[in-house]
Length: 116
Image (tube, rainbow, N blue to C red; front, side):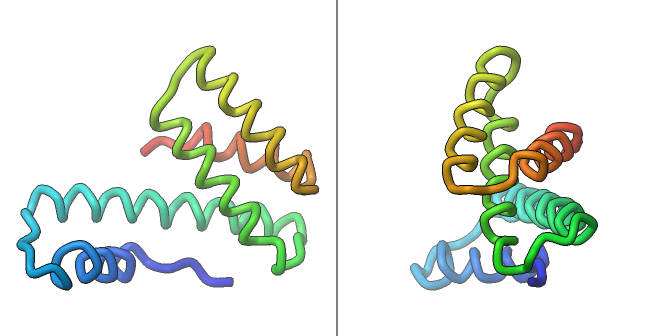
């Protein structure tokens, strides 16, 4: 399973949000979204490297990558005790979906140590 590049994501997003509606995209917004898509690409590559190293079957990659995305989103919005509570809730949700706890822990730790 490949990871989509930031340029590809930005191009699709621009068509969907602006060009298809006949709107103009400001340079500030384009720079902001370009950075966000690059962060997402780096996150997904990091998660995929963990999964490749462990030997997780490719059919389950999507669930683990989605878990990483969710942790990343929480990390961007919260800190301290609130961050810990939200991460615990997300962990419980994905454990109920029968994902491996040790793999989830590794992904969580990697996402939390990433600096964007």
